Image 1 (spheres, rainbow, N blue to C red):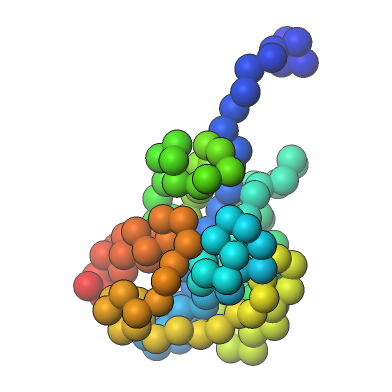
Image 2: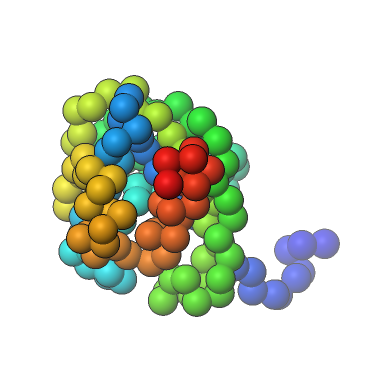
Length: 145
């Protein structure tokens, strides 16, 4: 039935807001590619066929930041059709806890770094996509702001 269906669907992606043990820092990557080349972003990416969003989240974090994480909670679903200039991309975002502090960039990340939350709250970091909104929702969920 679905093979003959010719409709276009949005892409599904994941984003991870990864906290250190003190919940004062998060992991950001510097994007290697367009869109938003050289901007900071949350680790994340597209869900592959056959994987859950949770599996995709852990895989993308490992590929882009070189660490393993525990998923703590769902932040939410971000579905604004204009959130990604490449097309309609729905992102499922998770709050994660880092299992290591030793970041190693890879995949489509130029670098992975720990950023103090104060810099994000004060908008001193230029973020890609709607990642500032995702981070703020994570902080509200955790009652950090």
